Amino acid sequence: MGTALYVVLALCLQVPVFENYYLCLGYVSMMVFCYFFGAASGMTVGALGVVLYCLLTNGLRGLPGWAAGNLVIGLVVGLTCSFTQKLENAFLRNIIIAVAIVLSTAAGILGLKSLVEMLLYAQPMAVRVAKNIYAFVADVVVLIASLPICICLRGPIRKFIKVLPE
Image (cartoon, rainbow, N blue to C red; front, top):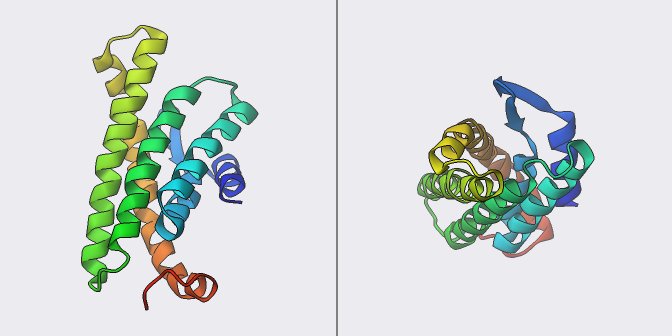
């Protein structure tokens, strides 16, 4: 369900921000799954969402690096969300999650995605990192903007799953 939502949001709600980059609103789905269900769900939604999105839109272009980057983001953000759920200070919990979002997106998009693309396209790493800065900024913005959605969903989701603290 999360992967399907990722694809629908990524396809239907494209908000252009830089040159040929847009805010990938599929990350909202990925963030919700990281927040409530942890790393495995976040990684699955992020990586499979990218695979399906790429197959539906432009074939394999961008696929391996973007999917690998989403695995890193899903892992780190999902683990961070799981470990911080018991923190009583909501402000501190959200700051920690936001820092994890920035660091994991840097590692996933600027690091791993750039490395995969460097190997695939035989371009210098500095060129790939420079090209991925737009994606990094756009992804961080959507992921952090998704935190209030997760916070608003805590009450309704708590009724269905018992793992969230009061």
